[in-house]
Amino acid sequence: MGTENYIGELLYRYNCVVVPQFGAFLTQPKSAVIHKATNTFYPPSKTLAFNEQLSTNDGLLVSYMAEAEKRTYEEVLQQLQATVKLWRQTLKKERLQLSNIGELWLNKEGKIQFQPSYQTNYLTASYGMSSFVSVPVVREELKEEVVALEEKIPFIITPEQRKKTSYRPYLKYAAILLLAVSTGLTGYKFYNENLGTQELVREQAQEQLSKNIQEATFFNTAPLELPSLTVEVVKKNRRTHHVIAGAFRIAGNADKKVLQLQKRGFDAANIGTNQYGLHQVTYASFTDAQEALEFLRKVKRTESSEAWLLSKK
Image 1 (cartoon, rainbow, N blue to C red):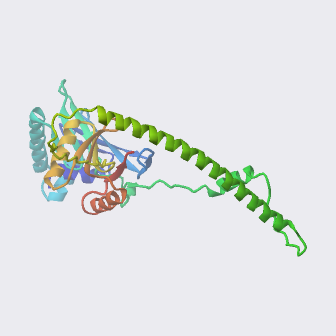
Image 2: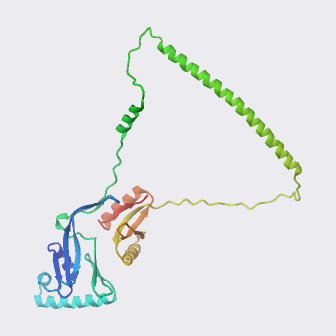
Image 3: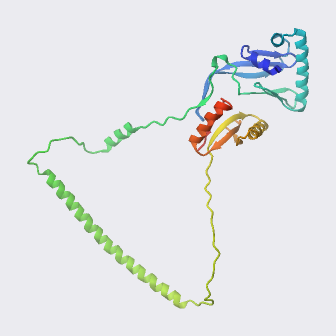
């Protein structure tokens, strides 16, 4: 088992794990949060940080490794010193990746910088809990629409019994008949007037066409064959639903993640930065929301429980 695995096991139980002559990994509790833009719920967790100044051996890591490997304290300490030496040599050439912990590199001043990994939650109280995306609730405001409609109606309809001697139904039918006759006469008059106008315009156009044909001179009466033209209309469907694999502060890390996922057969891509400046990497993107949700469930079940769905308009 690598040194970073022992460090990860201790981070579940302790808030500070010191790697002698290298630095300390620190954790701090973080409350549950809701990302309003993506409707994503994140459980309580521990934020991970690194302090290069805390490098004095407190015996915690060495003792834990010695007990786990059934070796002496001195043997494990020598092995750990060799590992630290190898880490520092790696940092001079490239970035150092520690599984489930994060990524370290040197800045221009030679100081160690740290980017934590968000794939592991070291808060034991949140065991079994993972982030998930909630579909926005669309509430039907039918009651409010009915109330607003009732306020606009200028009369109230109340049920009443029909009297046998009442003459009101006949007045109602007579009014309907009168309205139908009036509407029919008006439409017929409008139709006749409009028909006469259309006939006049058609006759003028026919006369102008005949005049143009008579004045035209034709130099070649042979039929002209025109090449056929084929126009292909391509409908572009925008992929607006993205299954997110991770977000990275460094663009190079996002590109590495894209290559890793593509090698594993995913249609991965870097879709740019979000409002926090993090580069977002997708497992795949879809045009259909239901298809994206089904793919998200599959990824959560087989790849990573931290995957989530981002939908853009």
